[in-house]
Length: 189
Image (cartoon, rainbow, N blue to C red; front, side, top):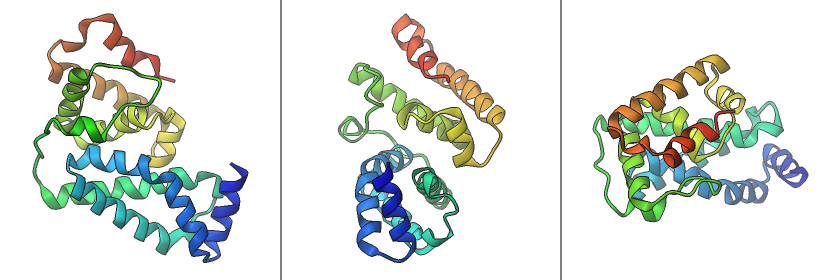
């Protein structure tokens, strides 16, 4: 962490190597989030590239160096949401998604169930999809999600709860077994 803070400080002063090192450490996490929005490698890379560009242009405006990752994730989410508005369509999910996305390492589920989750997430409203992706795919806490989305913690909790309810409806009972139910309850901090 101290090394990251040094790199952030250097990047804010215009050091391109420091900025590149920061992007290198964040790129996989950012790409996964972008891919969950687009379900397409090319579009996810486009969103990632636009995120890097926007971050490079505005890194000097970052107020608290400790929140670099949160700030960067917020930029990515804004870019992904702008892309979705531009596309105004649902992207069908293909089996190759399993090669590009995965839940955080503390959760282990079967590939078929994982694919069902990704397809169901794609059917949720953007608000619910965003909080669920941040919570269960990026493993952010509720306070971190509230910071990223610039909304109250209670709103985040409510959106997670409603998102999970809608996800369960979309999945039509796939997660009635105890192992999948624990997936949604284990991380609610």
